[in-house]
Image (tube, rainbow, N blue to C red; front, side, top):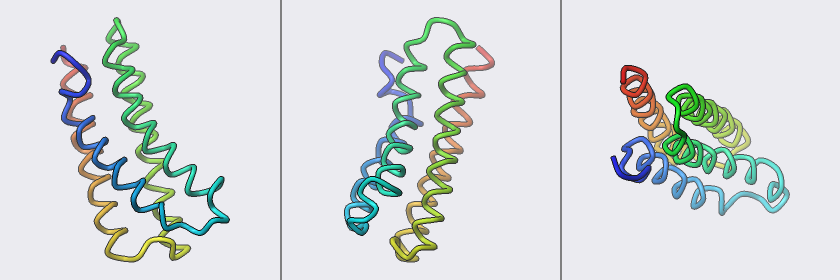
Length: 118
């Protein structure tokens, strides 16, 4: 791998982040600095931590950032549940986005496992 952009988990996370930005565009204005901002930051954190971990020199340091990415992804999934419960996200969009988050989580887990064995 030459760049973090070659990591499939990053690619999936990037697509998820684009989806999140589109999805949250319709949130109420009262959530501009609340849940909308929090969801967007969590999704950006997923891909940012993968990118940062990729450039870290030691395996322990790399894995730390990949694990932070996993934590941000779980945070995002929790926030999506809340947004759905508040009816900011309809059922179809929630199911679609939640499925993409689960797929990203599975691929990220596999990436971490493959790196831990190196």
